[in-house]
Length: 92
Image 1 (tube, rainbow, N blue to C red):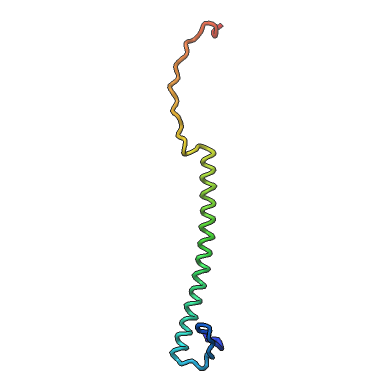
Image 2 (cartoon, one colour):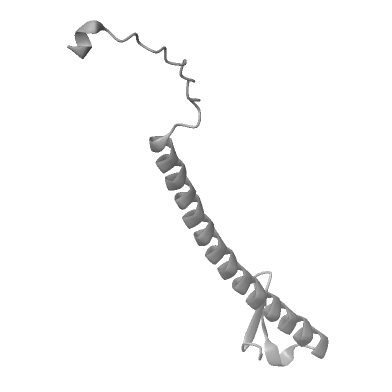
């Protein structure tokens, strides 16, 4: 990776050709780190987008379950049914 014609440090521009070898090496290191930070920021954006999609799917899954049987309201157990006595009228 080559340095730009000018390197700006704390608001002051320096011609790259006038920098010492040590300064050029450090400027190159800064470029490499800046590129890596940009790559990582893209990865974070991708991961955040995926997370948002998973959260949306989770919300939909929870809403769908709530419609079928609300989790916060337990079902009330039914009392056993008593057998009805057969009436004579029903047989006739």
